[in-house]
Image (cartoon, rainbow, N blue to C red; front, side, top):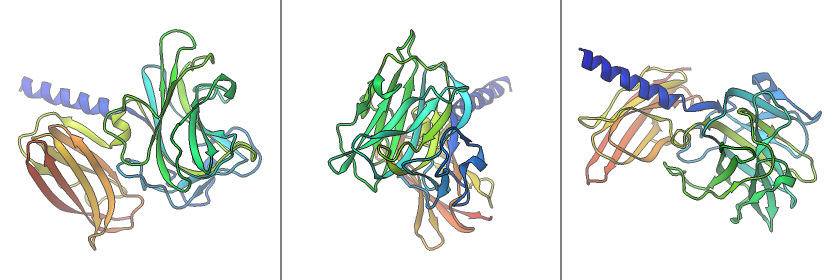
Length: 344
């Protein structure tokens, strides 16, 4: 009995530690036309163009915050705002979000940044977009423009949704912290790339005492981009960015796909599955007509038992099916499908 209790306690600790890696989520799951100030965001500067929720939400394959709720429109002048979360000041902090740039200026300006928990001025990890011969360059700086901006060598397309991951890395000493930017046009990898798209960028700007606020900025008409942004996800690990899958055990005796719980659900439910081998996993949701409506998992996973927290707020009430497919590194194959019901 003591051995069983110890194992259960260990598994709870592992699961709790995984879930605690997500510090902040914002999917703008509010009515289109709402001001985000009505949903916990605090206006910082600006007197025109209030920050409004727009429709539809952005989508990006494999990103957990894809296709949930609506999006936020940022126009090239107007309000700036921030929203807080439990501050952090150790290791690295990752902030992922989807963005679609519709227009940008040659000089460029930043539209996203991080703030310390008590500051409205010490912007860091400033993320920029500028026009480069008809395309987009993304950039990042640790402080002001004067402190130095790193720009992407790749040119990206207007009107296309990209996944951006901003990394703030605390480094011992003064003015030693680093910022990096990763830009993805397809599924982000399950492990952090060795080389970011931009960075690491350093500067003589002071280090952040902590990070505790996400900020959005509309800038001025002469330099700022016009864009849609969606799906903020602030985490302590790279893995927590790219998947809502949490490992509940590193051991599995057989393949299994469990019935979701609760069922019926509104709007969230948990889907559990077990893999006795390592390999490529897809978990997809289909409507009653067989049309794919969500791709939840599309990654390589190791042996173990896993839990996916599915949010169906972007779907209508009705019957849906979720299908798990596994392609093992050892040649094994497994597939199973189950029915679930969303009732709003």
